[in-house]
Each structure stands twice: as structure tokens, then as C-alpha cells.
Length: 282
Image (cartoon, rainbow, N blue to C red):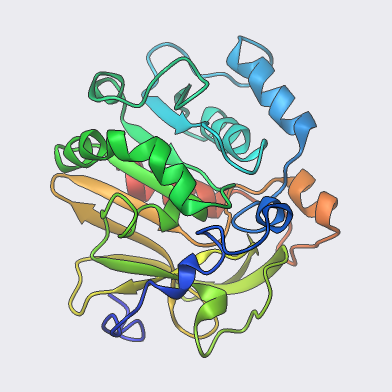
């Protein structure tokens, strides 16, 4: 554990719900949260791949990843993750789960999977949790038994507590809510991080920081400029939990849509490293 992360301060994990409990007007909620890019074009492309379209699709012998694609605020977030996993150096087969997909998130669905991904894109944590809480015990039992949970931005908030799957040795809080944050707005931006002692840049939109318990058994892959944990992998029973406040899966369309530039170029090596560390595939 990075000593700069420190113990979880009293009351942490409360401010993160400032915009996620419906405090903002409905129109603002649609734009707030871990929205990323809502590109319908990218979503349509990945949906076409799901039905057997183009690209470097993994074979039937590849491990299965379940990607939650229920009601959220970003139509392209789940497809971006699915595309990343299918085209990874060690690719996954991908199946969407959740309300509206035809595949409920159950113990039976998880039984055949190696990885479960809760992507970004949500704006109302409490509303999404109402869709997920019936699956919470199944997810926790599956990870405890050896499965791997990957949470990105909104999905990383959901790895925390109250409400959430409670999979972390600590909790989450919005990075922009921390007293020493370097970002003071909810707009899409690029955040510098220190990833294993190297400076890198990542797509960011109101994602969490991770406030780990003292002496937590966790690998902090990246920290924000203020030293708080930005990307973490931790054990949970026999399984692993990987969480990222920024979006390592963001492709060129995300940056182009918001007029942003990544000084490192749009690369996926950090995403691949996070997936590998979470799913035990290096």
C-alpha cells in the first residue's frame, strides 16, 4: 500500500453522493457522473461486433467476461469496455448482462465467467443500485470464490459501500470533493497520474479516489496529483477487485467528442495492465 494514501478519515465516502442521489435537477443528472463519451456510433459498432461483426474477435476457447449494460447515462461506456476486452492481447469473449440485455446478473451467469465489469456512465448511484442490489450477494460470493470484479469510474464507486457491493478494503470518495484535489469541476478532462512511478495521463470525469483502510492489502497502481489512490487492485477472498477512478478504456472518440488531448497519445497499455492484474492474466 502506498503510505501516502493513509487511513480512511472519519466520514469519508459521503461527499461522493452529492450528485448521485438526485440532488441535482434531472437535466443536470444526465450530464453529471462518470459519463465519458456517449457516442451512439461507437455503441452501435460494438453492438454489431456483439452479433458477430468485424474485428479481432476471440475464439470460443477464450475466457468469458460479463459487462453490465443496464440502464446508465452513457450509451457508449459498456461497448468501449467490451471492445477493449475483445481486442486485448489476451482477449475475452464478452456477454452483456443487466436489465434490458436479456441476461440477468445471477449466480448462474457468473458461474461461467472469469471477469465481471461494472463500467462507467452512471449519474444516479441510488437508482442504479436499485437495479443491482438483488445481485449483490451473488457478485460478492462469486468474487469471494475466485472471480474478478473490474469497476471503472461509476463502477468503481459501486465497489464501495452504502450503497455498493462493499468489495474494497476501505471506501470511495469523489476526487473533486477532496480538500486537496487538483480538479474542481465535473467536466470531462485529462488528469495526470503517477502510474507505478511514471507520469501518465488519463481521461477523467468526476471519478472516485480510493480511501483505503490502514494496512489494507492492496496494490495501488496509480495515484492522483494529491497522492490519493486513483487505481487499485485488491484481493477479496480468493478473487480480485480492480477499480479505477479515471477511464483507461477511453478511445479516440471520447477525446475528440470533448475536444481533449492526451499528452501520452491515446493508448491502452494501462487498461491492459489493469485488466491483467485484476483477472490474473499477465
